[in-house]
Length: 225
Ligand code: CA
Image (cartoon, rainbow, N blue to C red; front, side, top):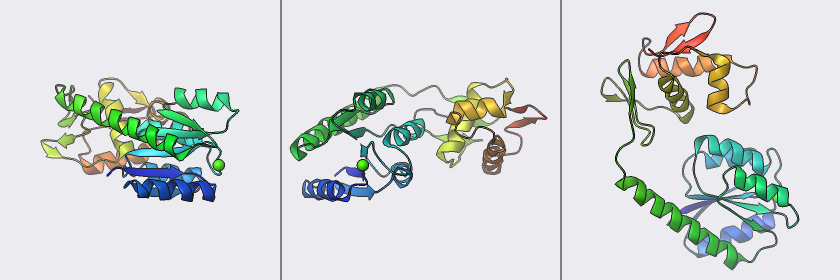
């Protein structure tokens, strides 16, 4: 059965939803604030996330924004009745659906079923499609769709962030990419001013492949030839 993560700080709601979901046979996980919820959602253990908008630490919208940089896991937002802006923003940011509090559990369960069914159908559709164009350079091969990365034919295990960074460098091969540009393309402007985080990830990628894969362009940034 699918696993569902509930990110909600109101314990009464969270416990109630969890109980109903387990009763339906779903696996469940819980997080009580935005930061913990984002971390948990990024583990990849879940098939669907129920995300409250009003959360401590990080708002639901912010959780969604960060989650969408790395994951396409379906998200249902829990919103307050009168907050049209939240709904619109949420859907713009890639939420799959929303439900207004207070809600009937049957309605939530019905929406979960629809989303999971669509996700499954989309997955089957993807399997039928021919393989995506593999990006290759300097012995590295990266498949943007399957996320499979190899170096000289050997599989390489990359974290999500390393993968995204490598993908951007490969997509722009032959072009020197500044740290600022890499940061904004890979993660938005969240870490603005801390461009040395790019150096750290480049080092990780080199350790997992070879020093020759990514060239350092002194005082500018990085490139793959
Ligand atoms: Ca809340």
